[in-house]
Image 1: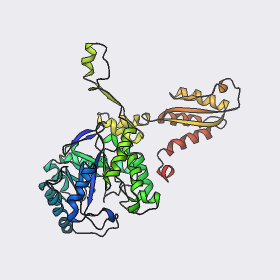
Image 2: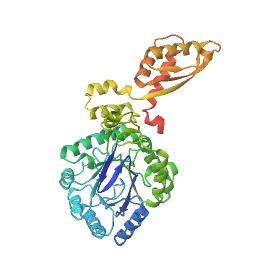
Image 3: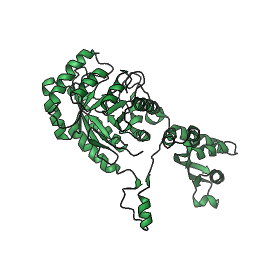
Image 4: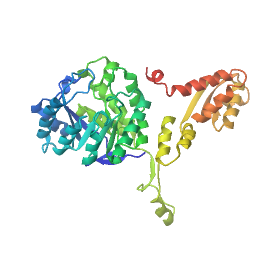
Length: 423
C-alpha cells in the first residue's frame, strides 16, 4: 500500500525523503547517559539537530528502559513542561512529545506541540486516544499489548499494530494521522535481540497497513549484543541498522545522532530506489491514442511486496475481499525458488512432471532429459501453495522422493522460523 501523507505540515511517505526525528531526552534514568539533555541546553541541542537535518524534534521526560528507576507523573511534568516552554516559538520544526499520559499530552498540545508519541500504543492511559482525536493531531503508536513493547516476534508486532490501528480509527483518529512503530528494543526481559533482527529484516511487512513507519534503533541493546559495546560506542552499529531499516521501508527515523544518521539514510535511499507503480500521474507512459490517454487517468497500479503469506489476508481485507477468500488465497501470494542438489535423473524428471501438473515448474539441465548423467541439480519454483501440494504428492512416491519432499517442507517452514534465521 502506497504511503503518502502530511504529518504536522511535513510530507511523509514512499515518494518523499525519509524524515529524521531528533530525540531530546530529559530523563537521567535512561540507558544511554550521553543522550540526556539538561534543561538549560534544550534549545541549543534542538537547534543543532535541526541544523544537522532533523525534520521533527521528539521530547521525552520519562525513561522507558525496563531497568530504569520509575518516576511519578509529577516528576515527568516538572521536566517536560519547562522544556516545551523553551522550545515553543524557538525551533522551526514540529515538536513531538513522548508521553503515555493523556493529561500531559493535552497540556503539551495546548503549548504548541504537534505530535504525540505514545510507546504504549494508546493502552497505558484510556484517555489518550480521546485527546488525540480531540486535537486532531498525528500520533505515533508503538506495538504493545499489556506494557510498552511487550510483543515478541514480527507476527506479534503485526497483530498488535492491527489491533491498535483499529482502536485508534474506531475512536475517530484520522487514518492518515497514525504513524506506526514496530517496538525495536529490549522493552521486556524476555525479548532477546533475534526478535529485533527479525523485525528490521522484515520491516517491509508493515506496508500492509498503509501507514508511515517510524523506526527507533539508536544505540539500543540489539546493537550492543552484536558489538559487545556500551551505548556510548554504538553509533556505527546504529547507523548500519538504520540504513537497513530505511532500505526495508522506514519513513521516519528517530535518533539521538542526527548528523551521521542523515548521511546513512540518504545513501540507503539512493540504493533502495523507488517503489514500482504505474498510472497517474506517471507521464512516462505513452498512450496509444486520445481515448487511452484519458482512460489512463482513471487507473493506477502498485506492486505489492508480500514476503509473508500471513500478511496477504490484510491486503485482501483492505479491498473488501472476504475473510474466507483471504485464507484460501494467502499461500498463492508468495513465490519461492528452491535449488535441490544431487537428485537422480529419474527423480528429477518425476519432480518436473509433478511440478507442472500443479502449476509450478522445475528447471533441469539438458543432460537430465537425455539421461546422459546419473545425478543432477534442479531449480524448483512456484507459490508456497503449489510447492506444499507438490511435497504432499512426492511423499507418496518411490525412491528417495519422500525424503526430498520432507526437505522441501523444511525449507518452506524455515522462512518463518525466527530462531533458525536469526539465532
